[in-house]
Structure formats: structure tokens, C-alpha cells
Image 1 (cartoon, helix red, strand yellow):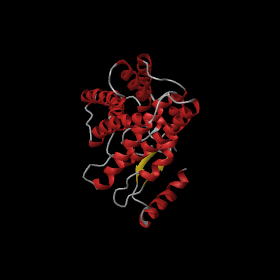
Image 2: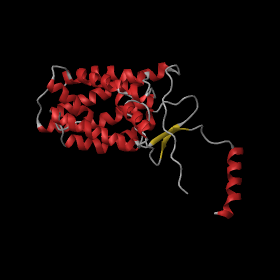
Image 3: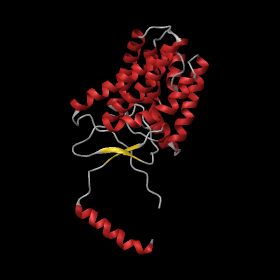
Image 4: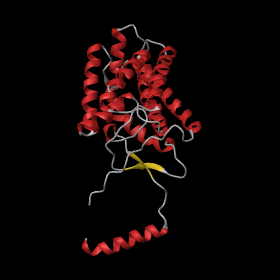
Length: 265
């Protein structure tokens, strides 16, 4: 019998213990912006949206962070026909990523030698996966880019995996034409950031009350970049809420039900 897909990790309202969750959100977003600056300085390829951001930066007088924020706002406008509602985490994503990526680029010198660039690439990918786990775990809702994909998936009825693939290929193509860096780092990011995030996520998922949250398989069909849900599109395993071990009476009832159904199987 095919096991049903588990529900995704949903975001929590701002009012639920924000003192504990806000520092985690801002820390994760700051680390994410810093990881982007490391990947840019490595000059070996960045993720698709950063390729587009870098291409826009090179065609204008904008800084990388400002270009990232501008793209975030433009993508957010596309939420309107999709009837997608932004959350606090959505706006925090735009602002914090812009500031932290520009700060990181100011602190990391350029140009660098080949060994240093490889080190920045590996460190940037690792830090990126960790940062996604941190701010997704705070559960403040999706960022502009992931909200676009989840909204488009809902409106079109297509799987999020397909929508995300199409959007990111288009973004990568446009960014490459504008002069963004596409290289081995782009491929490395695509195949490793999901497993890295999946590894770190159990340590950072915010637990509401006494409810446990953990990774389950198979992976669900939803993916975040800014703090909503995780899933197949980038190799994440799904996360769902549970209420801990079931009461003995419930377990007994299920056992009895299984016993009654056994002869039919």
C-alpha cells in the first residue's frame, strides 16, 4: 500500500514566542546573505537567482545587495495575480539578504587565487545549506522567490518540482545572458545544498509547545528558500509536526484495527 505524503512544515504567526524565533530568523538570513557573498567572490558559479542578481548588477550601477532587493520586490509584485500573501518573513528576507550580502562582499577581498576561490566555494555552499536550515526552521513564511513558485504551482495545478525547475532554468538563462557567473559552483550548489539543509534542519526547526518536528520520508512536493516548507525540488526531506507518541489507548485501537484487517490482506 502506498504511504500518503506527509504534510509540509507550515509557518507560524509572528505572535507565537517571537523573542525566540526572531533572532533565529535574522541570523539565518544574515548567514544566507554572507554565503551568497562567498559564492560571488569565488567566481566559480552561483545559484540561479544569484546568477540573475549578478547579471543585473553588472548591467547597472546597483550593488549586489540592492539588485537582490530589487528583484525581490519585482518578484513580490508577481504574487498579486497569484493571490499569494506575504508574511513578516517575506519582507525580512528582502531586507536582510540585501544588507548582509553587500556587507560580506565588502569584507571579502577580490581578486583571489585559485585555492582561495575553491575554499570560498565549498565554504559558501556549506554555509548556505546551514543558513537555509536556520531560517526555514524559524517558520516565518516563504521568501519572494519561493512564494512565486508555490503560488504558481497552486494556480496552474502543476507540481512544484516542475514549476521550480522551469522558473530556475529561465532565471539561470536570463542571468547568464546578462553576464552572471555560471560554472561548476552552480552545479555543486544544485546537487549539495538540499542534502546539507536536510542534515542541519532537525537541529533548528522551531517547536511549538510540546510538539515535536522531524524529518520524514519520502520527500514532499514543496520547497522553500526563505522559510516555509521543504521538499523534493532541491533534495530536502519533508518536515511535519507531530504530537509525540500516541496515547496507549490510540495505539491499542490501531492495533485492534490492524488485527481485524489482517485476514483481508
